[in-house]
Image (cartoon, rainbow, N blue to C red):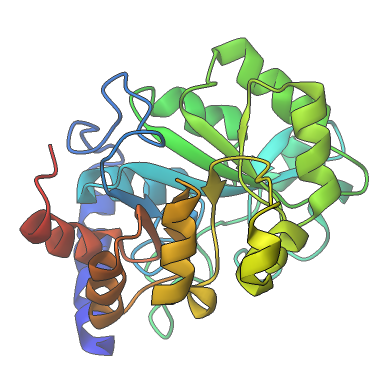
Length: 288
């Protein structure tokens, strides 16, 4: 497994050296709402973090080229009010800098190398000009794609700024907003009910642990749930189908697990390896 990933990382570096842009044609939504469709979804977690420096422009380009249907990202805000894509609240793990995102202006943040810590021991993406992208940069670069965006930053709140970006681009059919914090999901729905949301942590736990009797009075807040792989069982899938929900399980990187979850009937898989998932999904489903 490690050698295979190393080989793919090497191919990625060669692509980086030859071109900083990929064709966006293999994936995409083609104008449809893929989240409500019957189509199985290949969801690139952080842009496919096993294959490229996570949540960078090139990671998302790579994911699209691999055949991803949905690009997943995490959202924070800089000191000057710019929404950016990064999983952690600090830049230490993925860049050559240190500190909280919220303490930098975007200009300052852009000086750090977002490919610096990718793929040890060789670190092939250092010095390649990769920066932390703005949320709008990703949305505007992939106008045929769909997105899952998790609001990570809670304090200070960034909900209004995120919703403004969505409204300006009319992305209501192409993006799901997620958060593990229930109050964030609730606030998003209150501020703009047109925005698709997935469940918060409390609703998810209630759903997977409630009794059959409690199930009779359970009212889901939306059709979309993104559970961790550990909670998905045949019994849970039966309950999901009774409620006509759409389930996208995370984070699934091993081929055997991908096959298992597809066999259970999940609607999508959130993976760091969209390339492998696309190969397996294409052999199982009619993809396009």
